[in-house]
Figure 1 (tube, rainbow, N blue to C red):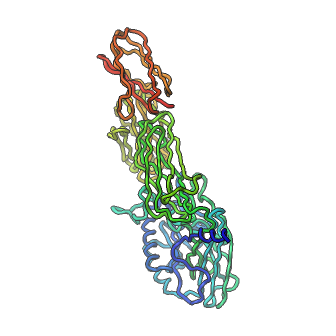
Figure 2 (figure 1 turned 135 degrees about the vertical axis):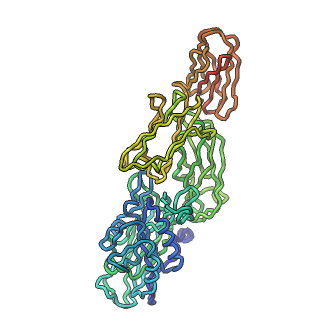
Figure 3 (figure 1 turned 90 degrees about the horizontal axis):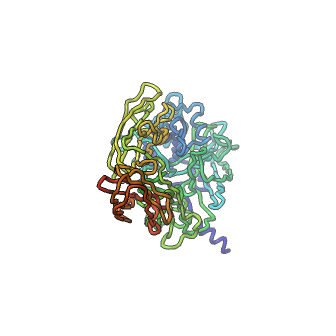
Length: 603
């Protein structure tokens, strides 16, 4: 009895307005079933989403929205969420649908004018008003239960006939949909974005009513054997919901708290007579308070030790709503910071957390660590999913001179590309370029920009693409190179989304800038150092040298005056035992000028 009681307590329901079992036997009018054909690269599709949402809001409990990602605008790049489905592609391409552009939509798979079912978003309202006034000869209901541990969904759907079907064949289609699937979304709304409220703080878009898969056999439903007045058709089935959907390299998670069922009856595969959403109850939830962290996105490399805002997903895997969570974060050698989440995170849903910028003493290798330390005022009952980490190496892109060039090779659509180079620490703009003129056809065009940098300084190169597909996406092999004379510091291949950020730093081969003519050579070893490092220098003539060691935030950690050194070679031992991990700038100064060299300390 105890186990059964716990199972009943650890149950939550997903979804909004449903037609639950048993199916109604009361005659009614048709529900609006709007299948919207969309894609993340479709700039007018958010307007379609908004129009569809308004139709649903005006017809509560009598409108089923199904978003089908299909066509060219749904073909995504690596790392982006692939939201296409086998069933969706089949419906998009079915005879008589007649899609000629996106967004497109059909209302109850009905031909209202002409010879095709689909039409532009300007037609949906009038079509929906026509449908909802028509009588339906059958009612539909569906519901399901999913085991939180096994992810096995068990569903049941019923159809009741309040009158005889005039069609020789009726088919029942059952779909699995998901709300709040995070991803990018192009948007041509100006000056105000279409459906702007559907964007999250980090710029991601909530893709709703996404068709994940069909649950009935085939792509156009199963045949209902008896379609006469007073008969009820019932079907049941099981389906194991995968952790992710999408093609390899383009997967995206499926959250049990955001899924819902949709079922509708068609005459063969057209003329939808009625439809309904259905709830899904989540059972067998192991813990009440279980916060999980995942999908950490942070800088790929570091130079001066300044991390741009990092983001990650906070998921509620427990049966209780998460109203508060305390999250700690730090990078190697840096101070531990705390972020507090406050809100209402429903079971088996997620939210995106964006951390502020963070500075730390960067070393050759660095680890960013984020952990949940408290959930709803107490301990997290499942510590196995509380931590996410990412290794962030020190950039290896080093320019050995101060007079550099940017060689930017655009693709056909140069008007989409802009870039800038900034001092990483001060954010001062060094140089910028673009947008460029579009080419008449697929191809490339080279643009060369010269600029000057300072020694021993970290820089960031920010490239933006307004369309979001980079500048090497089939319209010319775009790329850019940072060069020091004839030497290429690094090359970026143009494959990106909306933005790409790269870091590089300036120094000589060993990080040296020799402006002091009296110092013929300087080196420091080992680097990275642990407890000790040796500084070696060679003087042309007798000299007094002032040695200063400065960390990345400008603090002097060591200073020494080396009086009356003779011409020739000298070595100085540096005790780094009490120095924090990070990059240090060693400056050797005299009346002849300054020479600098960098030392990395890593314990």
